[in-house]
Image (tube, rainbow, N blue to C red):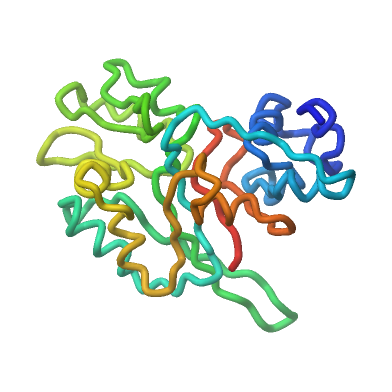
Length: 251
C-alpha cells in the first residue's frame, strides 16, 4: 500500500491540514486521525494499526536524519515539579530571565462543578520545516544536516529577534549577556556531543514524562511509543506546517 492509498483512509474532519503535511506524517508511519482545539492540536496514530486492519502489510518510514532526534511527552504524568527546568538551567547556563523549556498549565472541565489541571511541557520542537530558520537573515539559526536539531550560532546572530516572532512554540529568548537568541538544542553541546544518551531534562524527570531518542531507530523507545498500534499521539500547532519532532501522548 502506498501513501496515496493510506491517505484516503484517514478519518474525516482533517481537511484543514494541508495535503503535504498529511503525506509527510504518513511517510513517517503515522496516520492523521483528527484536528482539535481549532487546529492547534493534531491527533495521530500508528499507520501500522491502519494497515493491520486491511491485511497486515508493512509501511517503510524514511527519516531525513540519522540519528533523527525526537522527544515524546507522556503528558498526563507531569506534576509540574519543575526539576526538568532546573536541570536545564544548570546544564546549559540559562540566565534567570531565560528558558529553554517550560511547563504550561491549563484547566479542563470534568463535570458540572469539577475540573482537571493539566501540565504541558514545551520546548523547541526541532521542526522538520522550521519557520525560525526560514526567516533568519544571517543564517544564525540553522538545522543541523546530520541530526536535524535546530542550532544557534551566536556569533552570526544580530539580535533582530525575527526568529523569536516566527517560532510557533514561543521557545526562544534573547540572552542579554551574549546579545544573541538562545534556545533548546536537545543539550547537543553540553551532553549529546560528549557521548551522553539523554538530555538534562529527561535525566532529571522523576516521573518519566520525557522520553528522548532516535525516531529512525525501530529499537528506540521513542520509536516504539510513537508507532505503537492503538496509541494516539499528537503534536502542537500543526496548522503552521512546521512538522515538529516533539510528540505528546498519555501514558
